[in-house]
Image 1 (cartoon, rainbow, N blue to C red):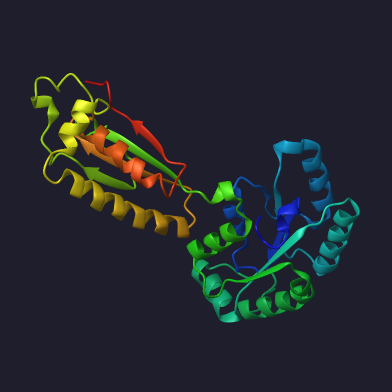
Image 2 (image 1 turned 120 degrees about the horizontal axis):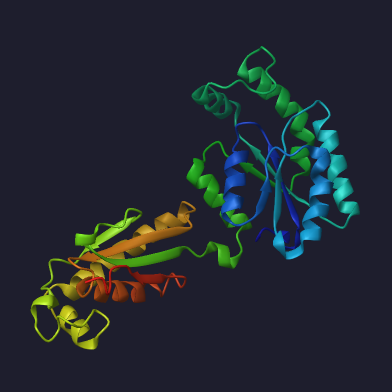
Amino acid sequence: MSADGASQQEIVIITGMSGAGRSTAAKSLEDLDWFVADNLPVDLLPTMADLARRAGEAVPRLAAVVDIRSRAFSTDLKSAISDLSARGVRPYVVFLEASDETLVRRFDSVSRPHPLQEGGRVVDGIAAERELLQGMRAEADLVLNTSELNVHELRARVREVFASDGDVSLQVNVVSFGFKYGLPMDADMVADCRFLPNPRWVPELAPQSGRDEAVIDYVLGQPGAEEFLDAFARAVGVALDGFGRRGRHDVLVAVGCTGGKHRSVVMADKIAARLAESWPQIQVTHRDLGRE
Protein backbone atom coordinates (compact mmCIF):
# COMPACT_ATOMS: atom_id res chain seq x y z
CA MET A 1 0.00 0.00 0.00
CA SER A 2 1.10 3.53 -0.58
CA ALA A 3 -1.13 5.38 1.88
CA ASP A 4 0.81 7.22 4.63
CA GLY A 5 2.66 4.42 6.30
CA ALA A 6 0.09 1.83 5.33
CA SER A 7 2.79 -0.27 3.67
CA GLN A 8 3.62 -1.56 7.16
CA GLN A 9 0.11 -2.83 7.88
CA GLU A 10 -0.62 -6.54 7.87
CA ILE A 11 -4.39 -6.25 7.62
CA VAL A 12 -6.91 -3.87 6.06
CA ILE A 13 -10.49 -3.60 7.29
CA ILE A 14 -13.09 -2.38 4.80
CA THR A 15 -16.31 -1.14 6.31
CA GLY A 16 -18.84 1.65 5.85
CA MET A 17 -22.30 2.25 4.48
CA SER A 18 -24.23 -0.49 2.71
CA GLY A 19 -24.32 0.34 -0.99
CA ALA A 20 -21.22 2.55 -0.84
CA GLY A 21 -19.01 0.08 -2.71
CA ARG A 22 -17.51 -2.32 -0.17
CA SER A 23 -17.75 -5.28 -2.57
CA THR A 24 -16.12 -3.30 -5.37
CA ALA A 25 -13.27 -2.29 -3.05
CA ALA A 26 -12.87 -5.92 -1.97
CA LYS A 27 -12.73 -7.13 -5.58
CA SER A 28 -10.12 -4.48 -6.36
CA LEU A 29 -7.92 -5.76 -3.55
CA GLU A 30 -8.37 -9.34 -4.76
CA ASP A 31 -7.18 -8.22 -8.18
CA LEU A 32 -4.07 -6.88 -6.46
CA ASP A 33 -3.46 -10.37 -5.00
CA TRP A 34 -4.71 -9.57 -1.53
CA PHE A 35 -6.40 -12.34 0.42
CA VAL A 36 -9.89 -10.96 1.07
CA ALA A 37 -12.52 -12.29 3.46
CA ASP A 38 -15.92 -10.78 2.66
CA ASN A 39 -18.71 -10.39 5.24
CA LEU A 40 -16.45 -11.67 7.98
CA PRO A 41 -17.95 -11.73 11.50
CA VAL A 42 -16.16 -9.05 13.48
CA ASP A 43 -15.10 -11.38 16.29
CA LEU A 44 -13.21 -13.57 13.80
CA LEU A 45 -10.83 -10.78 12.76
CA PRO A 46 -8.14 -11.66 15.35
CA THR A 47 -8.43 -15.36 14.46
CA MET A 48 -8.02 -14.60 10.76
CA ALA A 49 -4.97 -12.44 11.49
CA ASP A 50 -3.42 -15.27 13.54
CA LEU A 51 -4.01 -17.78 10.73
CA ALA A 52 -2.51 -15.41 8.17
CA ARG A 53 0.56 -14.90 10.34
CA ARG A 54 1.07 -18.64 10.60
CA ALA A 55 0.77 -18.93 6.82
CA GLY A 56 3.65 -16.46 6.51
CA GLU A 57 4.50 -15.51 2.94
CA ALA A 58 1.54 -17.50 1.60
CA VAL A 59 -0.77 -14.70 2.77
CA PRO A 60 1.36 -11.53 2.64
CA ARG A 61 -1.56 -9.08 2.40
CA LEU A 62 -4.86 -9.55 4.15
CA ALA A 63 -8.15 -7.65 3.96
CA ALA A 64 -11.53 -8.18 5.61
CA VAL A 65 -14.89 -6.69 4.70
CA VAL A 66 -17.13 -6.23 7.74
CA ASP A 67 -20.61 -4.73 7.89
CA ILE A 68 -23.62 -4.16 10.12
CA ARG A 69 -24.84 -7.37 11.74
CA SER A 70 -26.01 -6.18 15.12
CA ARG A 71 -26.61 -3.06 17.14
CA ALA A 72 -23.29 -3.71 18.85
CA PHE A 73 -21.39 -3.61 15.55
CA SER A 74 -19.27 -0.53 16.28
CA THR A 75 -18.39 -1.72 19.77
CA ASP A 76 -17.51 -5.20 18.48
CA LEU A 77 -15.31 -3.82 15.71
CA LYS A 78 -13.47 -1.48 18.08
CA SER A 79 -12.89 -4.43 20.41
CA ALA A 80 -11.55 -6.55 17.54
CA ILE A 81 -9.20 -3.75 16.46
CA SER A 82 -7.91 -3.43 20.03
CA ASP A 83 -7.39 -7.20 20.12
CA LEU A 84 -5.43 -7.04 16.87
CA SER A 85 -3.30 -4.20 18.24
CA ALA A 86 -2.51 -6.31 21.29
CA ARG A 87 -1.22 -8.98 18.91
CA GLY A 88 1.09 -6.46 17.28
CA VAL A 89 -1.13 -5.96 14.22
CA ARG A 90 -2.04 -2.39 13.32
CA PRO A 91 -5.11 -2.68 11.06
CA TYR A 92 -5.72 0.01 8.45
CA VAL A 93 -9.42 0.89 8.38
CA VAL A 94 -11.11 2.05 5.18
CA PHE A 95 -14.59 3.55 5.53
CA LEU A 96 -16.77 3.83 2.42
CA GLU A 97 -19.66 6.27 2.38
CA ALA A 98 -21.99 8.03 -0.04
CA SER A 99 -24.79 10.58 0.12
CA ASP A 100 -28.29 9.48 1.08
CA GLU A 101 -29.53 10.28 -2.43
CA THR A 102 -26.84 8.13 -4.00
CA LEU A 103 -27.48 5.20 -1.67
CA VAL A 104 -31.24 5.32 -2.23
CA ARG A 105 -30.68 5.32 -5.98
CA ARG A 106 -28.33 2.35 -5.76
CA PHE A 107 -30.72 0.30 -3.64
CA ASP A 108 -33.58 1.14 -5.98
CA SER A 109 -31.55 0.06 -9.01
CA VAL A 110 -31.02 -3.45 -7.61
CA SER A 111 -34.47 -3.72 -5.97
CA ARG A 112 -33.01 -4.79 -2.65
CA PRO A 113 -33.99 -3.64 0.85
CA HIS A 114 -31.50 -1.95 3.13
CA PRO A 115 -30.36 -4.38 5.85
CA LEU A 116 -31.58 -2.03 8.59
CA GLN A 117 -34.82 -0.66 7.17
CA GLU A 118 -36.88 -3.26 9.10
CA GLY A 119 -40.05 -2.91 7.07
CA GLY A 120 -39.65 0.86 6.67
CA ARG A 121 -38.20 2.81 3.79
CA VAL A 122 -34.69 2.49 2.42
CA VAL A 123 -33.90 5.99 3.67
CA ASP A 124 -34.83 4.88 7.21
CA GLY A 125 -32.30 2.05 7.05
CA ILE A 126 -29.64 4.42 5.72
CA ALA A 127 -30.25 6.85 8.57
CA ALA A 128 -30.03 4.09 11.17
CA GLU A 129 -26.81 2.72 9.70
CA ARG A 130 -25.21 6.13 9.42
CA GLU A 131 -25.89 6.78 13.11
CA LEU A 132 -24.45 3.42 14.15
CA LEU A 133 -21.30 3.95 12.10
CA GLN A 134 -20.52 7.56 12.91
CA GLY A 135 -17.99 6.61 15.59
CA MET A 136 -16.18 4.17 13.29
CA ARG A 137 -16.10 6.73 10.50
CA ALA A 138 -14.39 9.21 12.79
CA GLU A 139 -11.66 6.71 13.63
CA ALA A 140 -11.08 5.36 10.10
CA ASP A 141 -7.66 5.79 8.52
CA LEU A 142 -9.20 6.49 5.12
CA VAL A 143 -12.71 7.70 4.26
CA LEU A 144 -13.78 7.30 0.63
CA ASN A 145 -16.91 9.07 -0.52
CA THR A 146 -18.16 7.20 -3.57
CA SER A 147 -21.13 9.45 -4.39
CA GLU A 148 -19.50 10.75 -7.57
CA LEU A 149 -17.52 7.61 -8.43
CA ASN A 150 -18.56 4.89 -10.82
CA VAL A 151 -17.30 1.33 -10.39
CA HIS A 152 -14.22 1.88 -12.54
CA GLU A 153 -13.28 5.08 -10.75
CA LEU A 154 -13.62 3.43 -7.34
CA ARG A 155 -11.45 0.52 -8.43
CA ALA A 156 -8.84 2.97 -9.70
CA ARG A 157 -8.94 4.85 -6.38
CA VAL A 158 -8.39 1.61 -4.44
CA ARG A 159 -5.48 0.70 -6.69
CA GLU A 160 -4.00 4.15 -6.21
CA VAL A 161 -4.04 3.73 -2.43
CA PHE A 162 -3.15 0.07 -2.00
CA ALA A 163 -1.18 -1.10 -5.01
CA SER A 164 2.54 -1.64 -4.72
CA ASP A 165 4.87 -0.54 -7.52
CA GLY A 166 4.66 -3.99 -9.08
CA ASP A 167 0.86 -4.04 -8.91
CA VAL A 168 0.46 -0.72 -10.69
CA SER A 169 2.17 -1.85 -13.90
CA LEU A 170 -0.32 -2.83 -16.57
CA GLN A 171 0.48 -6.20 -18.15
CA VAL A 172 0.45 -5.76 -21.92
CA ASN A 173 0.43 -8.79 -24.20
CA VAL A 174 1.14 -8.37 -27.90
CA VAL A 175 0.20 -11.39 -30.01
CA SER A 176 0.87 -11.88 -33.69
CA PHE A 177 -1.55 -14.17 -35.52
CA GLY A 178 -2.76 -15.34 -38.90
CA PHE A 179 -6.28 -14.37 -39.91
CA LYS A 180 -6.73 -17.70 -41.64
CA TYR A 181 -6.37 -19.39 -38.25
CA GLY A 182 -8.84 -17.10 -36.53
CA LEU A 183 -8.78 -13.86 -34.58
CA PRO A 184 -7.70 -14.18 -30.91
CA MET A 185 -11.03 -14.14 -29.08
CA ASP A 186 -9.70 -12.18 -26.09
CA ALA A 187 -8.11 -9.39 -28.13
CA ASP A 188 -8.76 -5.85 -26.89
CA MET A 189 -7.25 -4.15 -29.95
CA VAL A 190 -6.45 -5.52 -33.39
CA ALA A 191 -4.01 -4.34 -36.07
CA ASP A 192 -4.45 -5.67 -39.62
CA CYS A 193 -1.17 -5.73 -41.55
CA ARG A 194 -2.54 -7.32 -44.71
CA PHE A 195 -2.32 -3.99 -46.52
CA LEU A 196 1.43 -4.58 -46.78
CA PRO A 197 2.90 -6.75 -49.58
CA ASN A 198 3.25 -10.35 -48.46
CA PRO A 199 6.85 -11.67 -48.29
CA ARG A 200 5.41 -15.12 -49.01
CA TRP A 201 5.40 -14.19 -52.69
CA VAL A 202 9.09 -13.29 -52.68
CA PRO A 203 10.94 -16.60 -53.31
CA GLU A 204 13.99 -15.86 -51.16
CA LEU A 205 11.84 -14.56 -48.26
CA ALA A 206 9.03 -17.14 -48.30
CA PRO A 207 10.86 -19.77 -46.20
CA GLN A 208 11.99 -17.17 -43.68
CA SER A 209 9.91 -15.55 -40.94
CA GLY A 210 9.32 -12.12 -39.45
CA ARG A 211 12.20 -12.82 -37.08
CA ASP A 212 14.75 -12.78 -39.91
CA GLU A 213 16.50 -9.51 -40.82
CA ALA A 214 15.77 -9.80 -44.52
CA VAL A 215 12.04 -10.07 -43.87
CA ILE A 216 12.12 -7.25 -41.29
CA ASP A 217 13.85 -4.94 -43.75
CA TYR A 218 11.42 -5.89 -46.50
CA VAL A 219 8.28 -5.30 -44.40
CA LEU A 220 9.44 -2.04 -42.84
CA GLY A 221 10.65 -0.79 -46.21
CA GLN A 222 7.18 -0.91 -47.72
CA PRO A 223 5.24 2.35 -48.25
CA GLY A 224 3.07 3.08 -45.22
CA ALA A 225 4.72 0.55 -42.91
CA GLU A 226 6.51 3.00 -40.63
CA GLU A 227 3.58 5.43 -40.69
CA PHE A 228 1.21 2.64 -39.68
CA LEU A 229 3.59 1.52 -36.93
CA ASP A 230 3.85 5.04 -35.53
CA ALA A 231 0.11 5.70 -35.64
CA PHE A 232 -0.94 2.36 -34.19
CA ALA A 233 1.62 2.49 -31.36
CA ARG A 234 0.40 5.98 -30.42
CA ALA A 235 -3.24 4.86 -30.48
CA VAL A 236 -2.49 1.81 -28.35
CA GLY A 237 -0.59 4.01 -25.90
CA VAL A 238 -3.62 6.26 -25.44
CA ALA A 239 -5.85 3.22 -24.92
CA LEU A 240 -3.46 1.64 -22.41
CA ASP A 241 -3.43 4.83 -20.37
CA GLY A 242 -7.22 4.64 -20.25
CA PHE A 243 -7.27 0.96 -19.34
CA GLY A 244 -4.81 1.70 -16.54
CA ARG A 245 -7.04 4.43 -15.14
CA ARG A 246 -9.95 2.01 -15.11
CA GLY A 247 -7.98 -0.51 -13.06
CA ARG A 248 -7.40 -3.11 -15.77
CA HIS A 249 -4.63 -5.59 -15.05
CA ASP A 250 -3.91 -6.88 -18.54
CA VAL A 251 -4.59 -5.95 -22.14
CA LEU A 252 -4.11 -8.03 -25.27
CA VAL A 253 -3.06 -6.33 -28.51
CA ALA A 254 -3.42 -8.61 -31.55
CA VAL A 255 -1.45 -7.99 -34.74
CA GLY A 256 -2.51 -10.03 -37.74
CA CYS A 257 -1.59 -10.88 -41.31
CA THR A 258 -2.71 -13.74 -43.54
CA GLY A 259 -0.68 -16.60 -42.08
CA GLY A 260 0.97 -15.09 -39.00
CA LYS A 261 4.48 -15.80 -40.27
CA HIS A 262 5.92 -12.62 -41.79
CA ARG A 263 4.23 -9.22 -41.58
CA SER A 264 2.41 -9.63 -38.26
CA VAL A 265 5.53 -10.99 -36.58
CA VAL A 266 7.60 -8.00 -37.68
CA MET A 267 5.00 -5.47 -36.68
CA ALA A 268 4.18 -7.14 -33.35
CA ASP A 269 7.83 -7.07 -32.33
CA LYS A 270 8.20 -3.42 -33.33
CA ILE A 271 4.98 -2.35 -31.62
CA ALA A 272 6.00 -4.16 -28.44
CA ALA A 273 9.43 -2.52 -28.50
CA ARG A 274 7.86 0.94 -28.63
CA LEU A 275 5.29 0.20 -25.94
CA ALA A 276 7.94 -1.29 -23.63
CA GLU A 277 9.29 2.20 -22.97
CA SER A 278 6.17 2.97 -20.93
CA TRP A 279 4.91 -0.52 -20.07
CA PRO A 280 7.96 -2.61 -19.14
CA GLN A 281 5.93 -5.74 -18.30
CA ILE A 282 5.06 -6.28 -21.94
CA GLN A 283 5.09 -9.78 -23.40
CA VAL A 284 5.17 -10.84 -27.05
CA THR A 285 3.77 -14.09 -28.39
CA HIS A 286 3.81 -15.27 -32.00
CA ARG A 287 0.81 -17.53 -31.93
CA ASP A 288 0.92 -18.98 -35.44
CA LEU A 289 4.62 -18.76 -36.23
CA GLY A 290 5.78 -22.18 -37.53
CA ARG A 291 2.23 -23.31 -38.23
CA GLU A 292 2.52 -23.14 -42.02
